[in-house]
Length: 280
Image (cartoon, rainbow, N blue to C red; front, side, top):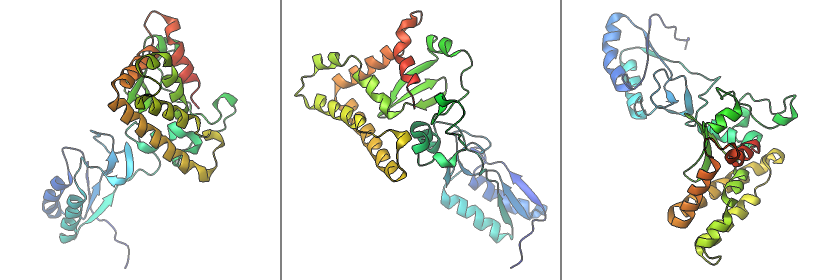
């Protein structure tokens, strides 16, 4: 069969106000105009509320804000029924650098050991030895010390994991760094939980699991999957313990508060500064 050559193309910009079902209703009108092919803007999952679709967060699925797979199939069948074609705009060379992008977040957390590390154009061994196996992100709008002391960089605990926030940007803390946070003021937790308490034993078990994680920079490819499973298990255990133990939850929240420092007291930011410096 010879290739189909579009004669007259009409571009539709899909977003929450122009979904697959909306486009399906326009097909007869476009056919009457003499349009031979519908040219669709990117329809893969993008950042929430995206008005253009080029900020893709998951290239393996359709954007649910535009409709379901069934609704997309209905649009395709409507076009076929009217003898029209469908051109899809895709963005294979970039994605959204967003916390909504699981590939991006995994790469930030796991570095060269990430299952998605090769998907991104990252120089893991730049001339600066300090940046070896690290990622330098140009995020700060001011000097690092100023951003730190103005509490623009803050630690947070969400859904079993620790993150650093810079305004709307969310960055994962390397799992090895969890120990710095969880061991801080450990004597306080011991005052509220006896060593025999199940919650305290589980807490110590989580610390031991963190210690057993191999260094990601020296990780063999075949062991990377095991590390990812271990990290997932650690986060799940930490999330469950946080939700089930009031003592652990209060302890973790207080540690996050301590790490975030106090404006006007520069020395109070030393814990967060050390945590950030050790990210690798």
